[in-house]
Amino acid sequence: MAGAIQDLTTVRQSTRPRRATEEGPLTRWTLTLLSAGFFTAFLLLPLGAVFAEGLRRGAGLYFRTFTDPATLDAIKLTLFTASIAVPANTLFGVAAAWAITRFEFRGKHFLSTLIDLPLWVSPVIAGLVYVLLFGSQGVLGPWLKAHHWRIIYATPGIVIATVFVTFPFVARGLIPLMQAQGSAEEEAALTLGARGWQVFLRVTLPKIKWGLLYGIILANARAMGEFGAVSVVSGHIRGLTNTVPLQIEILYNEYAFSAAFALASLLSLLALVTLGVKSYVEWRARQQLEQSQS
Amino acid sequence: MSIRVEALSKKFAGHAAVQDASIEVGTGKLVALLGPSGSGKTTLLRLIAGLEFPDSGRVFFHGEEVTHKNAYERRAGFVFQHYALFQHLSVFDNIAFGLEVRPRATRPHRNEIRERVHCLLQLVQLEAFAKRFPSQLSGGQRQRVALARALAIEPRVLLLDEPFGALDAKVRKELRAWLRRFHDETHITSLFVTHDQEEAFEVADEVVILNHGHIQQIGAPGLLQREPANAFVHDFLGLDFQI
Image (cartoon, rainbow over all chains, first blue to last red; front, side, top):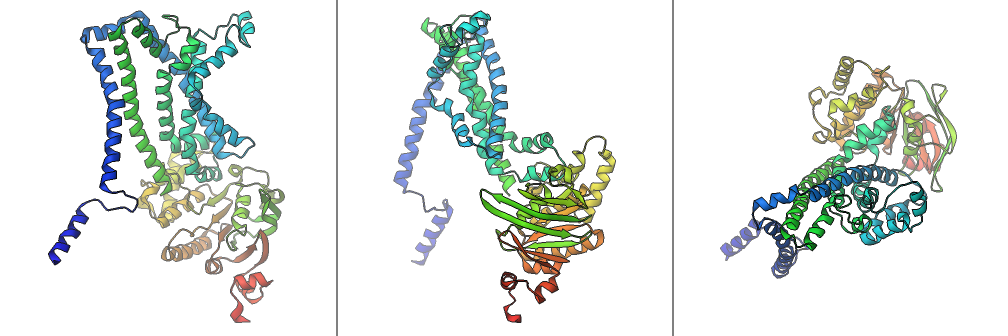
């Protein structure tokens, strides 16, 4: 009898410690299987299919996709767009997070809600808004035409639409982090004689480094992958206003499946790399936060 | 270097944190701001440091008005309750910070900075810890780094906000005695906030008692105990049994 009790306690100890909020094994297994199954069916399988389809006709055709001038132009345009949208939103995001976490002002709550706007508006609507504003029939259309400026169906429109959809990522990543960290270190820097910009460069920036990088890579992934808003303002002019996602659609519609999937695999690769970097950066950001609270 | 505060008032969202407070800390004195939590003592200290700005009243350092000067212009060394050390910088770089951010014209040479930091590390008995990061130090060690960092700028006055509040009783006692000795050696005009009566009476030359943003009484520890000015001071100091 005593032996049996002894055995039971050893069994208990050898498994994980039991928590009060934990469910029974049946619930646990059902939930785990359900999410694993969902993950496989809706994420892993399609991702695998993209690479498989791209490579089906052999590596030669796969790589030939990337020598097609229209595709190369699409890649260039995507890189160019991201190279403007991401730094612009980094600047804006840091400024907005700074204002929201460090100052008290009228309309602060409204501003922090507004930052999320691009997340709840359908990207197609975002694109349409810009067409209505800058298109030839739009509010500013005649004025732009008189000055020979093209925004819609041209690169500026694509950049503006991309800036809009990637708007929240940096700010959203920083606000909770900066709120949790507080401003004691900044105050200490002030009393030690540091001025505003010195405080920012020497104290705040190192403190938010990983959170900032996290926002930047998410914004970058979205900037390169955005379809809806860009599609509306682009006009799909081959070699001029096609980004990578738009080019994939065109190739697909023209039954150039291998090329479409080859190009799609490039975007998927970007997503995977982003995911890897994101996990690393997230881990570092959490470490930094824990350190600042220790 | 003295501190003079004239009729200082500060409200936060309608709530008066400090009301009409006037104090004078003579050159080389060590004065305690004592009161229950929410009595406005930390706000008063922050107003003197330039971390808050008053609604009315004036602040003087050695006769020079600093009321409207920014914290970085006041050269008041401030030690925070939770140390506020720079987590991404080593102990050495934390202490050097105030010297490194000086404009080129007044910034000491690299070698001089190193020498000064080592002097300060010696003073707070942390020479062996120069390369450590704040997260690798104990509470008492962190507090001493914070103190060394504040002293590095050769402050005109030293302001300490609950300097030993987050430490355990034993370390508290040690650092308390150390602060008194340190003050006797350097004679830097110091003002420190505490809610611990014993701490205030043991360390300070003079004690300022606050309640609800009002100064209740100012005086040497002995005087406060002999002649409490009002019922609050009497109760707060727990003097019942003496009367």
